[in-house]
Amino acid sequence: MEKYPLDWLKTSCEQVYCHPIAERTWRKWLRLCQVPQYAREVVKEQAMWLLTLAYMKKLEPNKKFTLFQIKFKLSGNPFAELHLAEAIYNACYTNAVGKDLPEIILRVTGKQVTVRTLYRWARKQQVTFKASKRLSRPEVEQWIRWAAA
Image 1 (cartoon, rainbow, N blue to C red):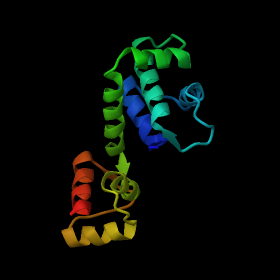
Image 2: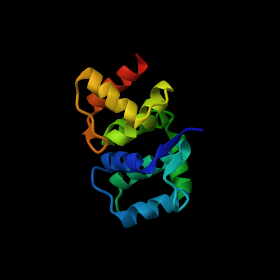
Image 3: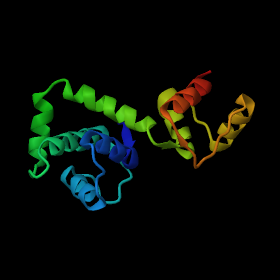
Image 4: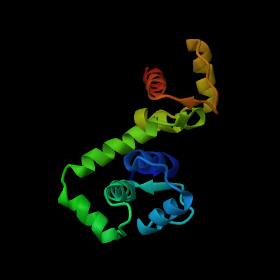
């Protein structure tokens, strides 16, 4: 069962929604999609529901939706799941921080690395690495290539 971090998912929902999502609104959306209150990760099904809700809210911002309507929207479009899975995948790479890199590498390559290992690789490749630095998508992909080598 794949799990997705909520911070990445929120970023992805904001991209779909085309606006920043307020904390209060985000909590409402999480409750609607049956995400436990203090969860930091969600399963794929809940992630799909949240992204679908963001899309539906983009089209009709003032309308109230139910979980049944969200599920119905997903079942009505067979390609929706593919597009949402792609959005989740893209969210993993946007706004990634250096300290998230070991988790991303583990998901993509199955290789367990530590932040200390990343510092060693950075020194070897003659690039700078900081745990607090935001990484662009090409940078994350480069780290994945180094990890897979």
